Image 1 (tube, rainbow, N blue to C red):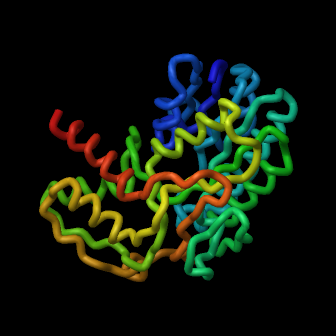
Image 2: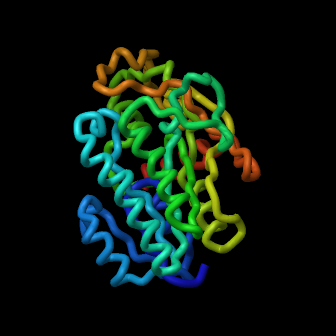
Length: 284
């Protein structure tokens, strides 16, 4: 697209992929913790007023189910009130708003794929705040895209990501223990970014969408697949989520499916592409 995009959260997986996908015709103003406190709503509003963007892409959230249980006020402020402000400013200034939601809006009680037509039923603070944001964005502005995404893999300048942590440990010769009872739809952030670009270019109508690679996998299956594709020698032990004590109640079986968009490639095919890129970077 031509114009200016304010990208909130430009150092994470989704933000990194979106920045790369938008191309040279788009002016991207990137924000992260280095230059914006997203919990300071006044600072967020000033950033929008100074930037005067044609679109805002919000890839910022207060993450981690336990973090949100321990700090519900911060979770509400960043995950609900900040998106609400973005929607209000969209109505005021006329920019398009792309807001990222999460599979965690579902409890997992269905024990099957969740589409856009399924009713959310969050069971923890993180999921509740993400669902509330879905509602305030949809109600707050006309020019919106709410994109629900599952567990991501892809390039990022931030550390601490699940797959990358496991691969680093495998390369160090450590044994790995990964839950086989947490089921998701692993999704490549580069593929998500293609949907963002299509939305900003007017190829998709406003609304709520699930954006996911096809198929589902346990976290154990996902990590094991990456280890195998990369040709690493590592023992990936099966574990239960119960082996990793948590404060929050965890949604366990929440894979997503796309009902409104054409199906994207299978997560294994996307993972092969990502692993090939990782091998090139590692070799360099």
